[in-house]
Image (cartoon, rainbow, N blue to C red; front, side, top):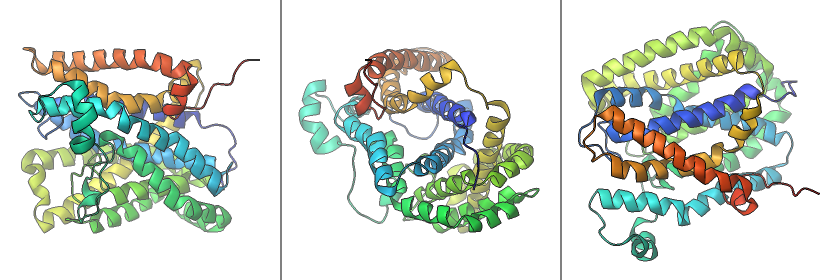
Amino acid sequence: MSSTIERWYWLDWLRVIAMGTIFFYHSGRPFIITPWHIMNPEPDPLFTLVNVFVTGWIMPLFFVISGMATYFSLGKRNALQFAKTRFLRLMVPFIFALFTILYVHVYFTAVFNGDYTGSFFEGYFWDYFLYGFPLDLVPRLTYFAGANQGIYLWYLFWLFVFSLITVHFFKYLREKDNKISKLATICNRRGGIFLLAIPLIIVDLAAIPPFFVFPSGYGGWKLPTYLIFFILAYVVASNSQFMQSIDKNGLIALIVGIVTSVLILVVFIAFGLDVLVSLSGYLLFTPLWAFNGWSWIIALLFLGRKFLSFNHRYLQFSNELVLPFYVLHETVIVAVAFFVVSLNLIVMVKYFIIFSVSFAIISLLLIPIRQINVLRFLFGMRLKKKSA
């Protein structure tokens, strides 16, 4: 088990960078060819290709960061304390957003697509709870392929679920450190860290339609695959030999990630999503997608450890605001894009307006959220201690 007791600042930096990436990613979603909540009249090929590239690793990175953070959190808490902390951190902002923030998202989406013509407040008190409430718990074969758990806030919902179903397994792994040490020794060889892609590939292949589809409603990945990323991240954080292997193989992973991403983009340009219609296409493309995702995770962890292992006065400030920023970001983007996409402007200008205005609005909203304890609680932040 790792003897590291110092805070991994590079992991905090990666969390902030991941949030920034998802913000710019969602700001560009109105311009891609696949349907989104608000769509530009004409899709843009460049934005589409960038979207495909980022989809290959951004949400896996979120689950990897969360899995590593879970290792340190469980070191200080028992299972019950951990579950309570996770509920306050994840489900309180999720539930709060269901009854407040997400209505704005649903309203602008419905109006844009011609599904609603009533007033803003009338829609909240009647139609939202009857027809548009973004929490789908009805069981069916395709439930895990894209049921609605808070639109983009599905990440909070499923991270909470993953945390609960793995907590005792993670505690067991802490007691059986010798087993992890053996795996770490095997992986701490040239190319050894890539062996951990095997369970990702197997699970991604096994999660077949109609139970799971690609691209799914969960960031282009399948839910069981996110669970494997989460578990692997916990395991990797638990032994320093995994980190040594990441340092050894990081440059190779970066090269592999670039090559496989180019290959994925070529396949996407040539065949589109039709490549997954046939069994042969599914069997060939799915392992490539999973291996590409793991390669980028290793490369990003390597780059983070190499260049971001330092503290900064803005890091703590930014890090504590990642969660409220995430809760707010897509709703604000949708509201801004609603008014921007119809303007007679080129795509890049529209994109610049969407992300700059959205960022300004979110920044203004974060000021009271950061200062007022009631809002900090509702957005999953630690409460400020009262000065004596």
